[in-house]
Length: 470
Picture 1 (cartoon, rainbow, N blue to C red):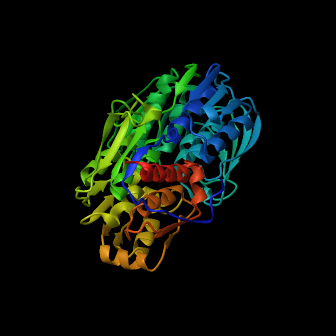
Picture 2 (cartoon, rainbow, N blue to C red):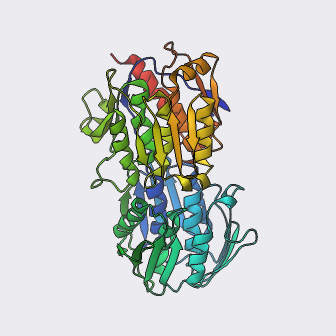
Picture 3 (cartoon, rainbow, N blue to C red):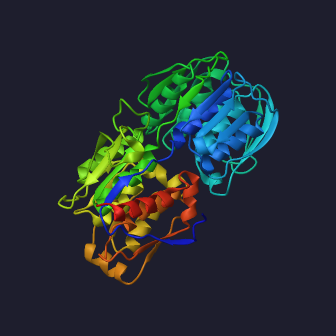
């Protein structure tokens, strides 16, 4: 069902009760799709995400000549690998605003034995960081041309394979550039030794390595020079093996919104099949659970309860916050799990005491300038905000928040960025006026289709189940 251009958020007039199954991880789905295409036969990805970003990757692989079958009803994607070969010798690829797909596909096309590939995206994609990846691929022998601004999209790649060897890359702006090199390293003539400089977000690098291991591609990490770690991936046109079936975890970033919901509404929510411990998940964004616990929630792995009929006996993560809990602000470095910082920022007006979020400079160059956007929307809600290049601090102003909300719904601009829509929707679930009337409205809520198309449907389902709970 289409969403209106402006969506009022109905607050929860009763504590949240119920369960919600979040979609598969975007990061894992995209990595597994590319590896499946490079594998030695068919691979079925189960629990896969179906969203704008993964559809962009699927369509690009089809344009490159791969067989890609999709079954959204079963959350499955079937890809037939060609043992490292890219069938199409020429293709025009559109990546929209999908940064992950843009970086992964750039590396994939550069690793082809032969072909001419043109890649472009929407105007905002042309502003996103690509230079480090382009320069690293060129140092491995890639012929990459930039018809527009040097080091940015659009790109034209005249492929003739990659040498491998030692390569340095500044990963401070995006760890996806390192992951892109890792994923195509088995296609290189020689083993690839990546020296990653800058503030590297290692959880995503480790995710890439562990997904690659499931496809038979080994790699290692070791402390390198003072500039950063070294990642070594075997080359010599190594073989990527299909595991037959590969299970995608529920998305920990998407889960952050629902795990934060009890702080806005009190109550309890259960997310089946999600994992919280570092030993049981591939996703670094699960670290946000620790942040929620520090604020005053109780979040951790748990079994479903008898009342949760859909997930009886299933292990997942439960988030709870009772009426007596004191919710307090916190200070956190989000550099290693920055996709979740907006969830905390949006909740900061209803916490006691200031919140300081740091390690987020690179988020100024994502789908939007997330630091500036968060500061702007929080000030709109009457909050005292100080933003620097790398941080955001919020001093809650509860009286001003109630005064502003008393004048009608506050429209939250999303900047075409899905994470603004979902984060501030959770804040809007807080019954600020105590009468169930909306006080926040989300502009362009359909931008959530990028990673979580049915987010608002699931949120409303939880509100309805909470009203019916006894």
